[in-house]
Length: 118
Picture 1: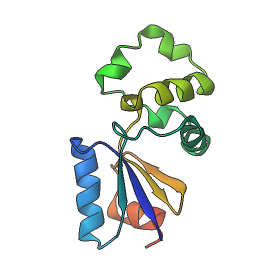
Picture 2 (picture 1 turned 30 degrees about the vertical axis):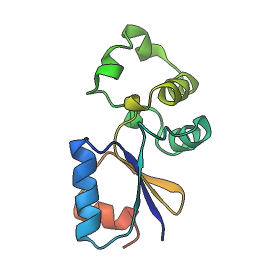
Picture 3 (picture 1 turned 90 degrees about the vertical axis):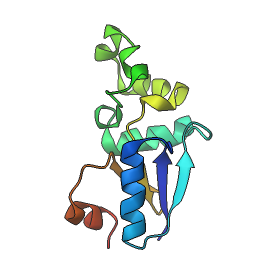
């Protein structure tokens, strides 16, 4: 099983996710989205799985700076925006064996274990 965690090292939610993975003795690869932004193809696959709404980092300044027009954007417009500024992506985004399984980290232990097939 391969686990990839997309996020930024200073994010509190990412730190919480990494700690949980370590405490559960799971190997993972951390990808810093500031240094290695995901490709538009990756983002498109993630949006196909989750939809754009759960992937929006609505608490960030980048999101607020978008203005009111963001309320009418299509999925394709969101994909382009996420690709342009990875800070718009909710963190962390967790993949298992290349497939997106979780965005954000508010799930219970049971849900986390189920999503990661533990």
